[in-house]
Image (tube, rainbow, N blue to C red; front, side, top):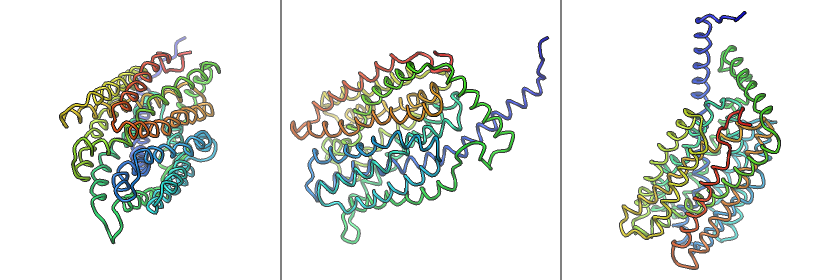
Length: 433
């Protein structure tokens, strides 16, 4: 005999689900968003500080390339341990300690006088930041089902472009001013490091590790969320053989490497590139550099929402990466107009809208520990490109005196990453096996 579920019961269940999802998103995502803004301001502050450091200390593009890249040695080494600590110990403790450490290190970078000091500061900063990003990706899987995960990830990761929209003009303004006879670039490190220290302390008290510990959720909300996540995890583990998990992890790691190679090389060189192309003041370079990231902010939110709406990940990764490759190829042609150059720069930047869809993939295929390890491995392998890309790009630019060869290299690696995504399974669902 068929069991008939009353319509009223279904309606109440749907209301509970909607209320819980909205409550969870409103509680966690805005705060994580602010934390990631602080993270990216600290990580990329050297990109704008490079303009002032080149004037005061005589550092070359090769030195800045190595300084930007060496960050990823410590960052890569602690990726997997950081993600596993979040899974098996405590997200709020890892995030708190990581933020206080990296904020302190960013502030101390203001004391740099030699290339060796810059390299050491960036190495330690990378180690301090290592657990934050993979930890948050794992943390989101503790609170959001696969139906909401790309959207949640896009809301979190849209802090990347917004950090540039906020940080670029601010950095340009700070660079142009000396306070108490101290250069603006030194103040830039201090003023961008202090918020991370403060936010790290707040994170310890504000974040909650698991739904069952959330005093801000009603008992029935906790139970609904825990049941949904438990059911999804059990289906995922049963559906994914070990060899398929390994294959997916390696493919994602390679995709991440190829795209990060172009992403970080372009990111750290953009202020200097804009300065050469435009000849504008530091402040105007900062304002100009904010425009592509304002477009990326909207594109990232849309791509994450659209990916969840259609339960599709591959093309939501591939298409943005191809757009980026087109933009980088356009810059190789040396457009004569600053407006045309800005258009190509914006296209190259828009490619990063692929990130939410890509980072929704590992936790949809794998069980808890496997997903945590996979996120760490993928980001670690990808972050090797964060060292290799800026260093090689800076070296080529110093040797050739031009961005042309380097940009062609970035366009090639980004296009290769775009097409490799298509080797992943079509459906990132538990029944995909």
